Amino acid sequence: MKEKVLTIIIPMYNMEKYIDQCLSSLCFGEGMERMEVLVINDGSKDNCPAIAHDYEVRYPQTFHVIDKENGNYGSCINRGVAEATGKYIRVLDADDFYATKNLPDFVKFLQGADLDMVYTKFSRVDECGNVIWRSRVLRMAGTVYGLSDLYPRLHMAMHNITYRTEVLRRIAYRQTEGISYTDQEWIFLPMAFVERWQYYPEFIYVYRSEREGQTMSPERIVRDIDQEMQGMMVMVNHYERLKTGLSSEQKGYLKNRLMTRARLIYKRFLLAYYKELKPCMSKLVKMDEDIRKLSPEIWEEMENVCFHISVFKYRFIRNWRKSGYNGDLWGLRFKR
Image 1 (cartoon, rainbow, N blue to C red):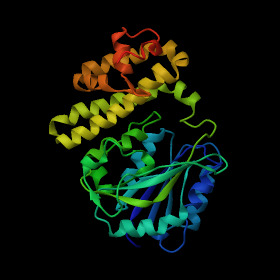
Image 2: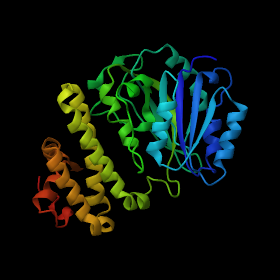
Image 3: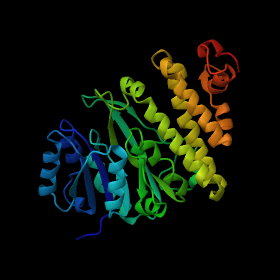
Image 4: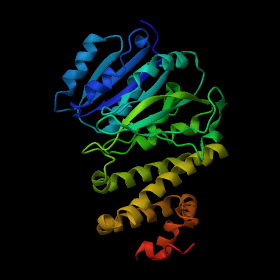
């Protein structure tokens, strides 16, 4: 059996409608035996396990289905990382798919690469498959970069990232289990240990947005805000636990990611979904106080997080704190 170049982890739960397109996008004929596709069935109740097992029968050198009890997203990632045999590793959500035509050359590229991470572009499509957004990259293909080149202007999402598997093994990476929105952890802690990375100029990942029930829908965001905050605290804990042994570049990257995450969570509470989330504002207050106790450094850094209004930099977190954690934040918008 040929050595595996790329392991693709697919967490799967009740994705009968989408899983066939997801898996078929990974089938390109000659060379696909260099890939290892681990479909982690997280206790699905619909027909998606049968569909996945059919691919396992048809392409036994590539597809492997792991059936397990439901443990949510992070448990699937952890199982996949533990089982992976590929030189490199990626995650593909079961309702998304890959750009099949670009996969063969990408696998060949990875086979000859000596990198800790490869950054690729992704596109976003609607339910009908229409492209509604494409990521842009401000980096040169073929150039080997270091950790300091990852921030602050480079867009970062799970969909962009291929890691050398050894990077995850070296830090004993484990993603938080039992909650959603843990894909942020995938681009947080492991990335701090990336020393060599390169931009690959083709689109690989196709992200399906605007799907009913999706974890990124406004309804789910409001409902699951507790899990967003729990994930934020996990990341702050990681930073505090490791910061004394990190270089200035590593600390800089992690702090940048924490500020990006804080901006999103606080903005949802204070600006985007203020009316919907106002009844549970005490939870945001508690998280803010917990961050202050756990990491005064990160808490103070959050004072500079801005929301841009024309030419104004509205430091909405700072102003919310100054207001005594109450008041209409839009009424404070010109306090700079």
